[in-house]
Length: 187
View 1 (spheres, one colour):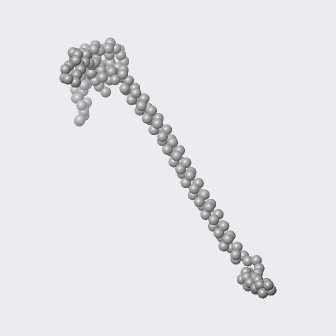
View 2 (cartoon, helix red, strand yellow; view 1 turned 60 degrees about the horizontal axis):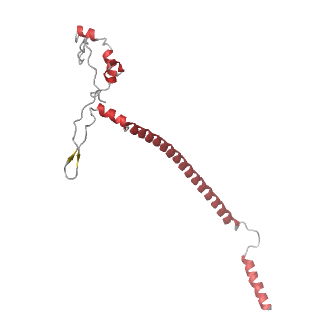
View 3 (cartoon, rainbow, N blue to C red; view 1 turned 180 degrees about the horizontal axis):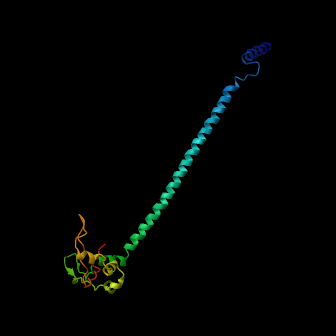
């Protein structure tokens, strides 16, 4: 066994010669550089991630605001559609367009025979509020307002008119013009 002890001493002596004998800073330098590089890389990654998240947060808040605006607009449009599709609004609009309620209907059977007697549609009398001039409509106000330049322009037609001027309107007559019927008024 003495030979194996010598060999260990010999191997240990050879290994001891390969290792530096004093404290070495050269062995710590790569480790320190690796740690600094990993920490700085992690910090840069966190900064990029944070800025990306903040941009996403701003975009999300803008999209929420836009969604709220569009929802409000959609609700307003739905209220408008609901108001225009109400039965009384449809009937009023049909009267404005000159439509009248239909008469009694007739139906066709699958064999081609007519069931029922069709009736002619007749226009109901106009409502009493539409025929009175005191209803406050714009047409009644226009008829009641006097024209200040009518008398002056009838005395000297075209005297003050320059090139391209339109002719003066005629003087108002003594008879009031008939009020427009609700069927002739358009949008």
